Image (cartoon, rainbow, N blue to C red; front, side, top):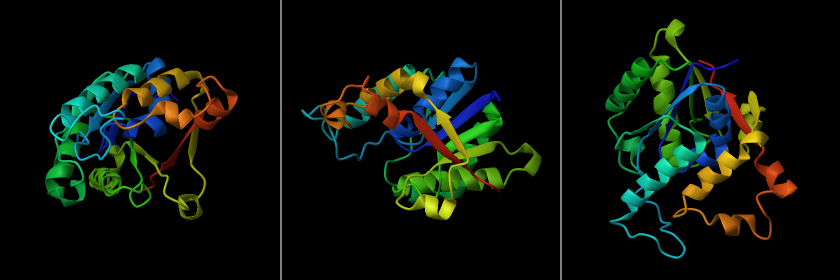
Length: 218
């Protein structure tokens, strides 16, 4: 089923690359509009390139450029940078945060939202972002709620959550996915991650070929 409009809500540049970039590229090719709301610029990240590409002052601007490059690789048509501070999402005024998200939902009217599964996404910003999305959608009239697909990857999450509800084969969109990962050069040494392998190797293709989501049941 083709989605009319997907709203992606994630806290950091690069959060889109590994878990959802192929799925987004697939939907975009099918004609779906995608709005990506990135809450922060990841300005508190410890990685600054290897060799060094930035310092604490210049890192936000660099990560902004990398995010745009990643979105271009995926094909995302509408990138919103919401300007929250990295590593503080859980401490933000939560009413203000959900108000911002509700305004965005009312504007773009997504048929699907993608975010992190609160409690199963390792980083406090990930969990807080997912929780804000769930809180916002829960407060909406039931008939107006979009579907919410969540990414989860904490250790043992499948034991509690069960098998993913949706698995997307993104084999045909690995070019987009790998370009999205490479865009975040300050954070990842893609060549080191591949080791002696190439992007075209069967083992690498198989490793990145599926993206998994849990539907949040309200």
